[in-house]
Image (cartoon, rainbow, N blue to C red):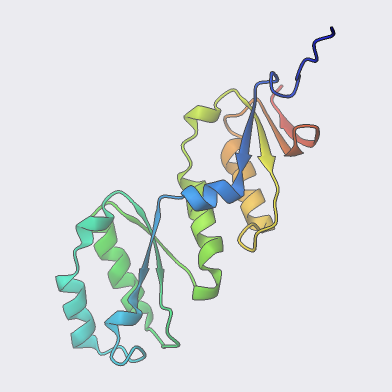
Length: 167
């Protein structure tokens, strides 16, 4: 009896799925729509009251995507004030329009991806259909990993496209 060897399974490739990375992302969303009068008007005194009473420590050390799901005009200083409060709690903030929320979460997850598990490894980035997985995500993951991996590929283990190989 002939034993069939699975060379793909024994290749030492690390498969990295951007879709799984999106779903496992440790990224929080802060939607300020509830802080607005009738969900659409920013009243400065009320807004600053929300800022003072909000429990910012819940975001300590995390990445927070800021958004407003209502169709409100939010002045730039409001986003700056929120970002400043998050920075005081060692949280990183990123703004996103509501329609781009998933894309922004994925880019934040890529930026936060720990590099050590990939150092010196052969990494295969899996492509899949998902609205958040855009060329920007593939560019970001390439830029993030290329500094540490031995090689970087795109596709599936049985048919991949080499992207980068350390010399």
